[in-house]
Length: 173
Image 1 (spheres, rainbow, N blue to C red):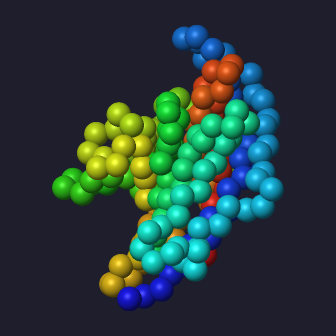
Image 2 (image 1 turned 120 degrees about the vertical axis):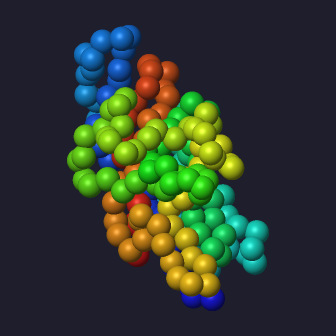
């Protein structure tokens, strides 16, 4: 089996837009969240095949907004509650979705870019609701849209004052 190292560094770094009502009027607010230390999901931290669960709280309410999970084969992210992440839906007959890498500062909002979707617990064809693959490895090699790059995960998350949009930096060398 080919060994792959997945390093996940998460830090919210970008403007979050609070959307109100049915209008397109929004005020940009910058909220920067950086964990005490980077959140690492590396193959060496997985105990046998039992995996690892890494919570990420973006709005500071002590409730997990996203959970990164992994085992020796790969890493994925799962939105919690009403939160969603921007992903590419797998082409049938496959199931699930692949987390989509965004460039630094790429604009996101309620309407996802063409061919992408906001993935949540209601997204069809998901064996594990609200989960998207980051990267993974099998006997034949490694894959995933984040494999070998540093890019940003698009997030839509709930806070007391409404829905917000932002980015989480992921480094997956």
